[in-house]
Length: 376
Image (cartoon, rainbow, N blue to C red; front, side, top):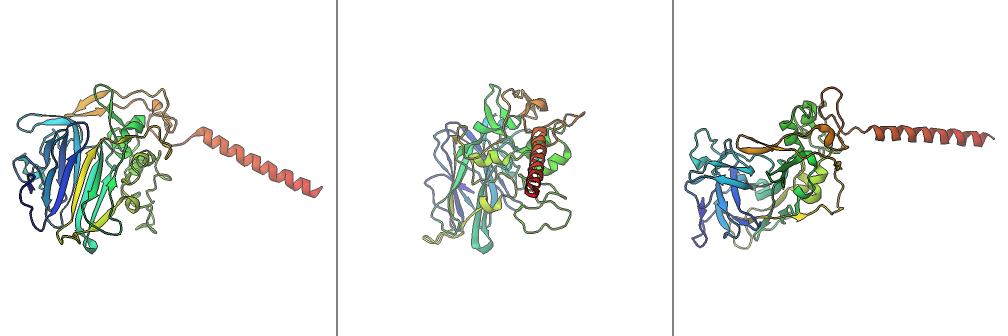
């Protein structure tokens, strides 16, 4: 449900205010979890789940039922006709693209809770009235990054009730193989490692895709768990399991956002479901904005990309632009080439392995020398 600014406030509903503070026009997409419909604003059809917000437009005020769960995102570089048909360079929903991502858009075959976003895209996610009468919310880069966003509680309280945000522009530090560029060569999105790997099976093995995506049956175990559900599972710790730990890139720009699916301890925020001051359901503001350039930041290290990296050319597939994979040899020194098939096969570094062997030899030689000296 939606109401224009200045109309009466719905009772017993959570208020979500959407703001475009970026320097570009965006097209909001929304999807609900199963059993709910996505809210919408300024377009016909409750649950249409999509609308345009031009730069400088007034905030969009939405109302959702108690218990609602779903997500919002910004689509960029979009073109739609009067019927809502078209596409975006980032954040497309459905295929072919449509302005209305939700169930009320009228397209046959649309799921009741609406279509989700195609990466790379930054998500603002909510679960209202959850366990302990708490709202749970987060900013997610699990599906990559396209524009910065933050969720601000409007009057709510709680133990971890604070702003969840993505202050940095991940595009400014996106590693070469994960970059999505527009036709002019500008980086407009940063794929997640999982997305990139799945989209490029000739460059990334299925076993590596299982690791990047924390897939069942082996890697769907949180590294924060004390014990996996079965002995054959391996905790999906990016630093230990992933061929390249690309989470360092995403956490460098957005340290409080999800960088992979098991980031719960640091990336989930929660507030009381009822505002203690008014007794009304809680309210939040979702603000899309231009993130800070973090390319000169030294907050965390990121996988180094060779200066000779080749920029992937663009090809149009199903209404959205996807990068054509460049040869794996150009992706950076943290990738190696699996002999014969050209697929990325890990973070192996022959130089690192040789140095480890040399250090072991030096230590053994020092111990032998010390023992001989003691005998004399």
